[in-house]
Amino acid sequence: MKIDIRNVHLELDDATRDYAAEKIGRLEKYYKNIVKAEIVLEEHSGDTANVRYGCKAKVILPGNDLYAEEFDKDIKVAIDKVEAKLHHQLIKAKEKSNPSKIHKAKNWVKEFFGK
Image 1 (cartoon, rainbow, N blue to C red):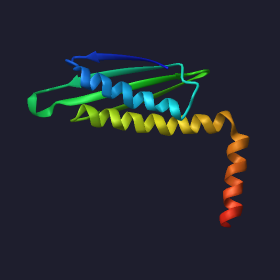
Image 2: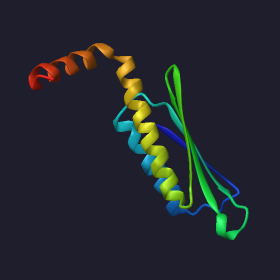
Image 3: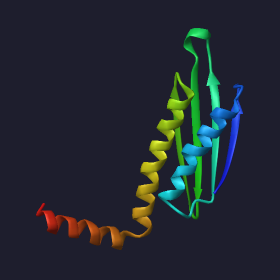
């Protein structure tokens, strides 16, 4: 998977850039067919007390694109939140791409546990 990282109104250090690439790169273990990920890290500030960081990410899949956006006072927390949102969306996309296997597995669990 190719990962593009851009920064807007923010001086981005290598540690933060590597952190974002690592977190978003982990998504590939949940869905193997990811073509590309585009990450935008930005800073919104009115004054020094109200600095907020934003993370926007777009994951390009064959035939579909996923998008997540979060803002927080800490850039790494915003990246973590975006990664969690994209993880949830990838699981849903995976279920939609192969519903018969998921349906069989859910039925087996229901029968096994009696719920």
